[in-house]
Amino acid sequence: MRQATVLTLALALAGGALAQSLEWSGSLKTGLGYRFSDQGLTANQSTLDLELSTGLEDADLTARFRFTYDALTGQATFALHDAYATVYLEGLDLAVGQQVVSWGSTDGINPVDALNPRDLRMPFADPQAQKLAVPMVRATFYPDEEGRYQLEAVLVPTFTPSTPPAPEWAPAQPLPPLAPGVVGVNPPETLLPEPELENVQFGLRATGNFDVLEGFDASVVLYRGFRHTPTAKAPERLYLADQDPDGDPTNGPFVLQPRLGYDRIHLIGLDFSAGLSFLEVEGVVVRGEAAYAFTEDPEGTDPYVANPYAQAVLGAEYTWENGLYTELQLIEDYQKGDQGQDDTWSTRLMLVSRYELDERWRAEGVWLHSLKDGSGLVAPSVRYTFADGVTGTATLLALYGAEGSELGSFRDNTQLRFDLEYAF
Image (cartoon, rainbow, N blue to C red):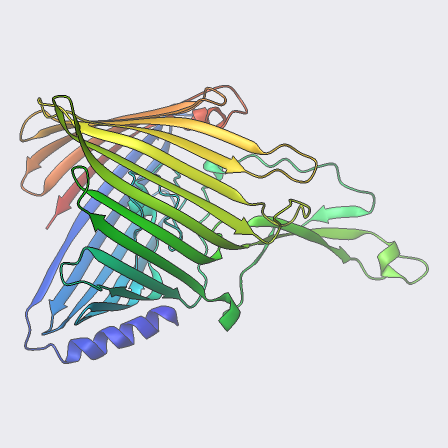
């Protein structure tokens, strides 16, 4: 129904644009993944993306379609990814439809970027590619003629959850010993927020560009909505009728029904980017983000409601004289503990590098390391350009750490992936 509404809007605008030029572009990508632990395939998938766009006098229309065939499962899917219209008014841009909004300044991990759900089936995929477009209304106000200040307001009428991780990436959740009377456990039931007025999600972002240092941008973000990943709720007991001799089914055996729900949050955050020059070094860029999420269990007294949490990222990037790009980030995570338990802190380091060897060869690398438990991942990749728009990429994803650590638990998922892409 949501996609049908977006298509109706898109077709209505397109009808008035028959005389306008229609631009199109896209890509065809096929990928193959190999896991070392069991010598099995992790991916054998082809994806066709097609983007259509047209410009009116004071408006644009954009739609992107995606066709995917997964040879491992034999499933083929065709979906509308983005479809939205943007109207340009004096001092105001208004975009309506199914779209992705990206907030934040740092690379890869963005604490303030809370509007769109994500496809988490492969957690270490490109974070931007993970984002799922959802129906929304986005208004961007420009109070000054120079465009140095902006105020963005985004309204998301209905809730869409993130796609959960694939089984091999799902955190281990062993079942506790079954209580007396339990004769079975059903698959989890998912409880989504109802499509009603009080569940509408809303975000605000105020941004300013200031003439200090070598350039300085800063934003403040407010978000009212829901977490896109679920929290375990109180399980329900499904009693078996006619199993108690006294006729009271609540005295007899029962099946346990686990439930998952999505908690309401109020998030406040900020992000910035600044250009720096010191001594004889020029071109250093420092970026930072931080966000704190308030939940409906501020003291951690309810085990079935998410506790408040926060995340902060501080990084610096620099391109050396030989063209080598490097970026170092410090990532801090905080989770308030349940009542009577300690709060949890986690610190990670991330190093990103990129180097263009020549017009055809490009090397990249990512290293993520947890200072809390010593686990981490290394992801080097090499890309080769065969021709204009045709590239091949080989990527190694290697995870390390002790069993039970944050990333060491997934070390059996160490894999090698090959991708071939044609962009047109």
